[in-house]
Length: 328
Image 1 (cartoon, helix red, strand yellow):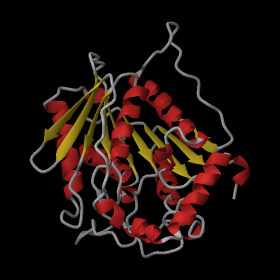
Image 2: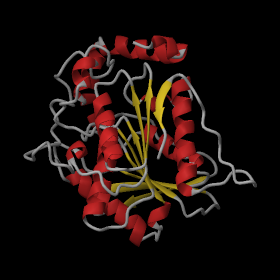
Image 3: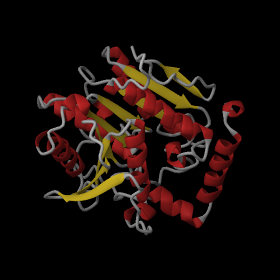
Image 4: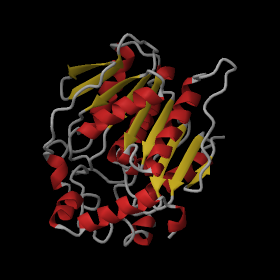
């Protein structure tokens, strides 16, 4: 375990998570019980932004825009939650971060249908509908759209792009995937090697990963359900981030190998000592701050944003806390 490269705050947060998982609440987190009906205070849109609720036929969407700014750029955010939990305030905070990191881009976050009431392919169909809404209703150019997702939302984002490619729908400019859940068979090597290291989903197979109700009657190796088993040709550039302690580490690394084998453009970073969705710490720990800076740099490259008159983008942060593979 490479704890020598983990920040003190990052290590403390991981230890706190382990202690919490040993409590009664930990069990409710692992099974997804707490994700199904979250109780949260009302979210307040920060100054300088406009916030709009949009009701689609089957699901609501939340549209965040910087006030009096129009860049033509937009992030389509697909939230995590094991395909059983609805939107939470953290993803509204994520939307603000994505807007800032894309230098004033808009952000559309969808509250897609979830299981068990709506198993596969409900979430995928909702993601497709939201993407087409961006193209047709708001007239965004596909080269100005980036799809982002974390955990289940990361797997859904990858499945969405595979679906778009297969159905000859114009592809987005890029993908941002945080700890994506890409294999619902849970067959990756890290489910064994990190079984006792993952503070959130380790130590048991009686959790929402191994007992997914989203699968329904489908074959769990169906590529639009478990994109790890799909084809990886002709995908847009991808940024993948994952913690070294996650049981889902293989879900990133195997997909990364397949993208490289298909000659795709990829940047993958493994953050040493980090747990599932550590980016939710936002600015509380150095690893999360660095991950968001990396996302900002990726978005600037994808969108061709120039922050200085001479055309230079932000310099990449070099750190011993992550292992990197640059885009080809």
